[in-house]
Each structure stands twice: as structure tokens, then as C-alpha cells.
Length: 198
Image (cartoon, rainbow, N blue to C red; front, side, top):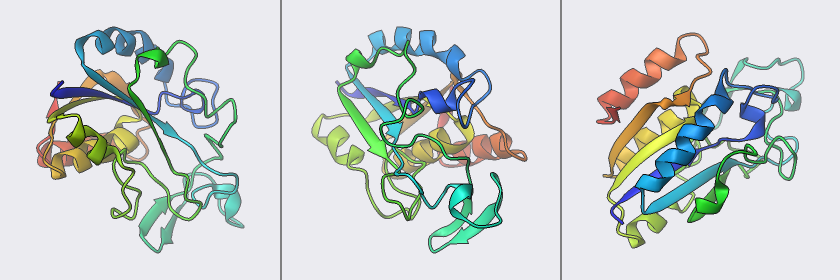
């Protein structure tokens, strides 16, 4: 039970045809399902934004998707509306084996703060509760897969390493947005934090 698989945001809006599609985001699903057999603990994360979330470009007059703004907690990319609570886009990809999950962590529910990481909202202070769950299950090592490598996987991996977990990111079971070189920067940041790329 000491190692967990953390499956990050494999949702319709992050797959081809979705509102914030990650190229080839759907192609990792069969591999993730196969990897689930290797772990005693499986956690899925789910972006779960209220309508009008502050990270949506549509919430800011004169702003377009992928513009940057300053929020009270720091710089924030403005996104197309995505993963709105209860929408088809927020649902998990239909082929993802969600029945294998021990826990589903929903994030990004606070309308004023975005949440990339599975562990903390973007203020780097408000916890999701995932750390406590893993500790009580005796989990010490994590393998992360999912979407997108350079945002939610990256921030989750760095936070997990900072919290003292042994962290690996399985690169072939992730896909990236790669916004202005964000993928290379993410791998560098993860490796600097002690995250292993496998």
C-alpha cells in the first residue's frame, strides 16, 4: 500500500474536441488503465470549476484565453471556460477506468483561486486534503500520470516532492499544452524539485 498512482485530470475538456484540449490527451487512457493494476492505491483528480471562475478569460473584460494577469496569489494564465461543474466537459474520459479509484479529489472549486496541483490551490497554501489521505493510507511514494504535463501534473509533482513523498512522473502517460516553452520549463522545475522522470 506504500505507493499510489495519481491520475491527473483525464477529463473530456482536456481531450481532443474539448474546450481546453491537450494534443493527444485521449491517447494515454489505455496505458493509464493498464498501469492501475500495479498500484494498491489509486487517486483521480478532477478539475471542477464553478461558472464564471476567475481563471476564465470570459470573466475578465477585454481579455483573451492565454493572456496573463496578476491575481492576489501571483501570475495567472487565463483559460477558455473549461471543466464547469456538472458539465459534459468536466466528466472523466469515457474510457478511463474510474471504478478502480479509491478517491476522487476535485479541485478549482473556489471561484477566486485556480488550482493546478492535486495538493494545494494556486495560493500554495489552501490544501485539497490529498496529503492527509495519503499519509493515513501509509503511502510514501507516488507515480503521476495525466494532463497536462506542464501545468497540473507539474505543480502536483513539485508539491508532492516538497511534502516529502518520493515522486515519479511517467512521461509516456502524460501529454502537455506546451504554452511558450512551458513543457521544457516544467521538466526542469520538476527535476530540480527531486521528481524522477520515467
